[in-house]
Image (cartoon, rainbow, N blue to C red):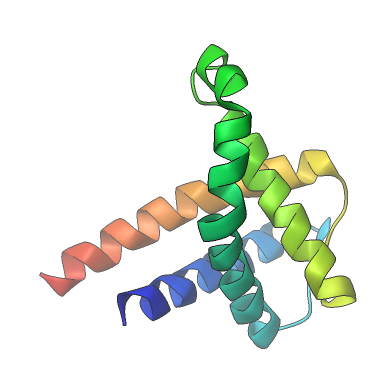
Length: 116
């Protein structure tokens, strides 16, 4: 149940990022939930592999390269969803990954405090 709640919070963050930038196109709420679901699966399967492969670069950049890895998973999600979720360029994907990380952190903290 916690995983489903996390997917919904991530979908809200994706919708917020879509509203912030014209360079990101999201077809609707259903697409945001599907993108969040695919992103969560990619974060479980693909992200650890990318983290291990890029560990030296991540250490040298003091962890900032993790935003590039998050952008890569966003671009893979965009590729899987086709025209219903589009990000124009890798730079926009990095910016979206940074903002998604911040929004997810804020939303998770808000709702964790609300559960108590």
